[in-house]
Image 1 (cartoon, rainbow, N blue to C red):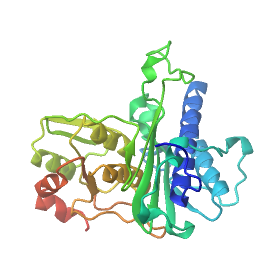
Image 2: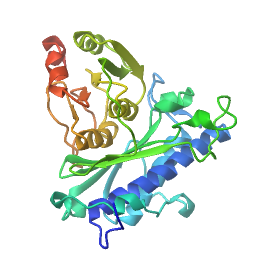
Image 3: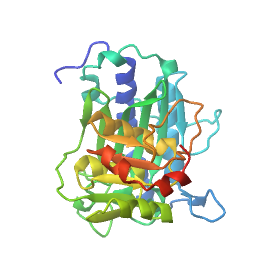
Image 4: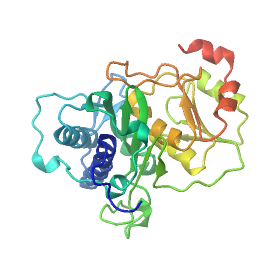
Length: 320
């Protein structure tokens, strides 16, 4: 990527802004943890779905920064918010990420219009893990859909390499320059910000806290060498991108569109695939239901094999 494109396409400008604002959201997440008051509230009576000040503040930063930059853009975030809410100016991020603006936009996406775009935001994917100190599981997800298809995405890992700080592992050191990383990608362009290493083993990654009989039956049918039970859809797909896992199997309802849009885009950008248990790709237009009712089957390679191994009894439980 030589120099910045003189007049970058809308999709690249949205992607560039999304990388910059994801980085800013990561700083917010670390700062709140360092301050020690997470401001936890629960979104359900069973207290299984926590929300923290990091969720609330990071979402405001992402959603309102993008709305300020691209007037009229549709941005859908996980956390409920008021359209009339006043957001402090110092919470907004108006920067760009130069590497994105240097990219040559694929011809297919050069003329994308603002009304064709929906941005899906999970400000803290892996909130439960965040509250439990499982920092590696936490990601910021910004997915960009065009006409209902996940086309581009950003996965920011705010605590990547967090144990490299001088106070580690006892404390997180958010000022360390080596903490955090951002991956971004786009269909027909590729994905950037990580390294992939082939894994000879069949390693399945799945949920650590939302297991069901169907989830376990699907995993058993894959005959894995190893199972990695981790939090966050973004984290699971990162394991696929890096080669630490072979497939992400979640034969259950539960994931939402903001969980899968960005990871799906990155995975598809490198030839992988993410579908429901019936092989259907998810749709991301603004009026779609937020729940992914058909579960998730994702793989960096050989997606069809893993899809074919899902037992019929499991598929019959989940709507197509």
